[in-house]
Length: 461
Picture (tube, helix red, strand yellow):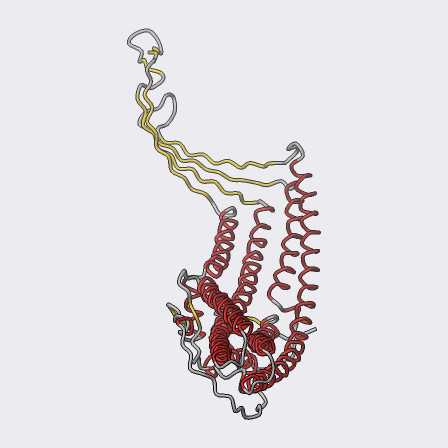
């Protein structure tokens, strides 16, 4: 099952609706005109939340930070370089090896041997001081296992590249969700201040009614309790905003909290993301599924590699040596040899390697099955999640509209002397919660649409 096809504009636009200051009220149904005029209130906690230390201005800026600083991105990329290095090491096993060696030997005990009675010559053995230099060339000209290992190493490069591609997709989705979360948390922080202002206005209203003998101390206590609840919500909301900025900074590889600007250009963002990530219709072409399939091939080659441990191999070597002195031999020697090695008994290493390779092959096959199941389920959930969250958002919009009308009418009634302070507090709390729920669902809709696209996307950056 594959997610619905579509461009990124509805994905990003719907997601970032949560960041606009009028995202909640823009869809609200018009409420009856109120005759209530709230009193002017002020409080230090009504000040706007602190600005982020750093902003990521565009998707390209986010990608630049990812490539330069993200530990997850850099580590995944280094895995590709390591696979390439292992391929070069495998190739080296097929090439000749040339080494040079120099030595100096001093003998503390020597013996003089005459070749006959005088005046026959004599010589000292071993030579008291010997300087020697040599060059050794070795080459395994016939090593089936080494030849086979080169192909396996090249296949591992493809696995590393596909794994890196899948990590790019996951990182892109994580960054998109983090950017949406910072915008949503910023909007919730604004709503919390609106809620606190409304609570302070209700407190001023109850105090005024008590002053003119139309209220009771219980009304004031309930209003103060509502103000305290609004303050607590504001504190937790500001902390959530800070944490979301820190999460985005961590996703981009920075210790500094980062936020996406509220005036981010949606058109530019859409074009940049569409250029980076493209939807893939075939689940079998998902990088993680293809990588799992290639890992199965690598495991199959591992079985054959274990079988090749029984194969003989031939090695050639040649040595050129020169010394300043020699006993009954030329000063310079040069030899060559060929060695045929037949593996006979190694204590059971080869049989153990075969059992291990067969077990690894079965694990790789099951991992491929798991990757395919995960791809199908995640695609289905991502596709279904868009409809689920959109339906939930519509319900939340209706709940918010109803809560706004109820709160407005409760205010009007209480200002005219009807209703109780309990009605006033309950309606205010319901409105605050309904507004927050709507903002969060706006973000969840955007995240669901982004997930529907990025679940099977191929990202290149």
